[in-house]
Structures are given as structure tokens and as C-alpha cells.
Image (tube, rainbow over all chains, first blue to last red; front, top):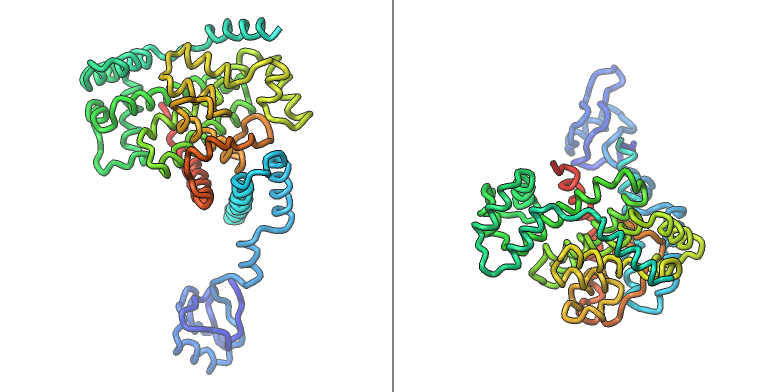
Length: 116
Length: 285
């Protein structure tokens, strides 16, 4: 979930929290898909920030790019393993592919752990 | 000294668990051009477990036939004799490995994963090459390191010395074997395969998976398993007992006529299928 200022809301975004006005009356419930009209109503009630489903840019980056330590250890292991055979361009390609695969696998594992 | 050792190993190999009688009988039937699907079905249906396995395998996603196959004869007609033999060989190999699992512990399990990964890899490469006997190549991948299992189970002391040397010097297992034993798992595997009367294609792949150029008319099969072995090691599917990559054999690579760009999709497919196939193996009756 991310919190967005009213000006950044776009139709189609899904609310992660219910929105109340200052009287505590429910305006929109959790899970509502925003429409242009909803956004206008929120504006007229003076709501500042609301939570919608999604990940921040920073989180997104974290999830698709392995951290430096993982990258480094994957690369170090591969270099050690392939050290005697890299005079062959096929082996160079295999090492590159294996590096990508291993980094991807470490991400999947991380995501799985986070979900549990 | 090395001669004595080899003799000792041959002695040990004769003590190795033999394949189940049914599988031997089936091998005989398959080798006989006069046998019919009916003959083969009779032998298979005699064995309930084998029947159950065969039907489950035929109906698994590995084949993806659109309709359910409910009779052994139907399965035989659909898959062909060679495929049936390969399938039965595969399932008996699983027994052989799993019975001994407790004894070998961790190392054996990772070696098993490596064999299975290599089998899957060989199948994926074979699919890319439109090679038609996929089951055979799968079994070849599964059995390529069978010599290491023999060492582990029957020459535990020597095997420990080999694995110690592998760690100490960071070398390939093959090299440590040459130094400690005087011969390699490929040679031991060959002895065993011959003992079991496996088809010469399998004998050749097992004995030449590090040097496919010596496999004669089975160059392509040996080359497929050779490449699958390298790919598995590169992405850590199980462990071949060392932390090195064997050099790619030029002749083997050239014979496959694969584009460099196919390596990435092959590795991805192999990794994915390896994850899937573990399922059907764990549920064996």
C-alpha cells in the first residue's frame, strides 16, 4: 500500500483503507475502485491523503533488482566455478545466462519468504 | 595398483542391486522384434505397482495427452516400446536411489538432484533439436553419473578421499577420481550399464558424457547429456560433487548446431521443469 496526495490520485486506483470525512462518516469503503467522480467528492470533503493499493517506486525497485550483496555473491561463485573454461565463447554465454537465472531465483525466494 | 582397484570395483559392481525382474523381462521383450504390444502388456500388468506408475506417468503433464489413457495396452500403443522401457527404467532407478537414501545422506540427495536436473535438461535440449526419443535421452541424463553412486555406496573410503581432494584443490571430481582411484565414474558407470544389459546408446552416453567425441554413432546423444550436465551445474541444480564446470567439448557443441541465443530459453525451461517434475517423483507409490 502507498499513501498518495489527492492531486496524485487517478481513476482506477483501488483504495487500501476506508475513507471517512471529518465527522467520521464513511465516504468510500476499502476496495473501492476510484472514479473521477469519487475523486471530486474526496476533494470537496477536503481529504488530503489516502492509501491505495500498489508499491512505491523504491519498493518496486527492490523487488525487481537483487541487492548488491546477492549480486556480488552470485557473481563471485560463478567466476570461481567457470574460472578454467572462459576461453570459450559458449561458456561465457552460459555463465551470463546462469548469472541472470540465479539472481532471478534469489528474488523469487525472497518474495516467497515475504509473503509467508 | 589401479588394476587391482578396478578388479575390486568390478567385484563390487556384481553385488550391486539388480534391476527388478520385470524390468529385465521387459528389456528382453523390447529387444525382440517379434514381441507385440500384447506380450508387453501382459508382463506389465503382472506387476500392480508398475501398472499404476505407468498409467500415472502416461496421464501426467509430462506427456500432455488430451485424453485419459486407462489401459496398459493403450499406453504401450501410444508411447511405443522404447518409451515404455525407458519409463520403467526410470521408475526402478528412483527405487534404487530412494532405498539407499538414508545411507548416503546429504551428498547423495544433491547428486540425485543433479541427475534429475540433467535428465530434465537433456529432455529440454532434445525438444529444441526436435530429437524424437525424448524418454531415452531423459533416462540417459538420469543415469549419466551412476558411477558416482557406485563409488559412494560401495567404495565409501575412496569416495571420501575423492571428495576431500575436490574441496582441497577445487578441482573437478573426474580429476580427483583419476588421482585417487586411477579411473573415473564414467568408466564405473559403463561397467554397471553393461552388467545391467542396458541398450548400447545408454552405455555410450554414460561412458562418454565428458568426451562425447568418443561416443561414435551416439555422438548426438552424448553431446546432449554433456551440455545438460554443464547447464545444470551452472545454475546449481543439485551438485555433481564438485564446484567446477567441466570444459565444453567443441565437437559436441558443434554437432548440436545450436545457436548461442538458445541457451537462455533452454536454461529457463530446464529450471522451471525441474521444479515441476519433483512433484511426480515424490508421489511414487
